[in-house]
Image (cartoon, rainbow, N blue to C red):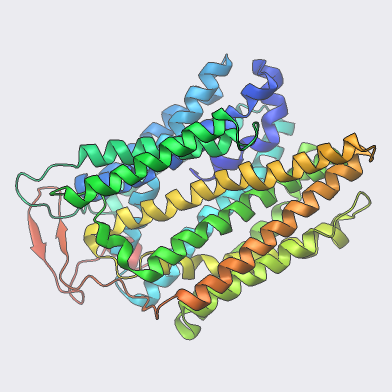
Length: 480
């Protein structure tokens, strides 16, 4: 539900613009407000879940998301819509790390955990891609407002069922230990500044003040955060967290993966509607094969990861997804859906899906229960920043190339198609490069979370130490 709303607005943007009288530049903030809030707050959300309770933070995030969705659906002005979208991004930052942290704790068997993480990753990906389908259907058949209102019954069901199925857990903290507020503020503002700068790059030159000032400020703030964390008694992010080479590499390559993934879906939607003349409904339905391919790839990846290892499956997934993008880059103005779009979509979806359970396992490699939500917050932050990077770099590359070609007298539709194809080839190169980094730099990854002496803390706050073989499971979920 949460990740669906990152993409569900894309097909409906023209209707939202007409209904609320957005300006062309203001309309981008329907997307940017969500990405900005989520990208800047995810790591903080992950640490808050570890400290104050993962179930509590997940339920809180769902409540905020439901309220924000209602605000978006009832919006009567651009400001009201942007505020609601910002609230949805905040909700993702709170709920997403907590949900992945809980899954890592509920499934203690390595094979079960790999499957569970694969399902979690797959639902995230399917939520993102199905957003186009749902948006097309609801926008054409009812109103764009229902792409937000549809979240409300889902949120109610989660709030009613989850407390019955999932027990609370949080990290054990020393007495009088406080949350590292200087580190939290510096990290959050730094990430927000970087994401804002990347988003501004979609509209302004890279050397312009609106881009450079927030990027430089963000980098300086993150550097200051490292100094603060080194001296903090109870740091927000222990610097030793980044000492694990596999975790560091998979988080870095997540930038390439999401930059290519988000720009692929964004540009192909524009190509289908602006060049091939698809309606929002047809454009939405055209994404169904990608959802099916991702689902099949997740099943394949979850099966192969315990046999071949995280390194092999992740690397092969990156390279195969890059090949799918390369196939898609062969598009032209006369491209047919079955012959020009569908083959690359299936290859891309299958290999991208296979990557997800293995990459998520790698992101949690060597993480203890104490830091499980923090690790998922770091991974999700890199994905959000990667998505912003894709919109800022790859989509901007396509649009500026097209503009230059049009100024030279090239037919606008031909120029747009060539711009999209160029950006897709760059995305393919990023995917292949990420796969090579994984193959060269990954350590040998055991799919089991290494937490043999971690403590589980209930709602009362009383902690008990459990060996991994005897740790209580969330019975209803783990047995499913």
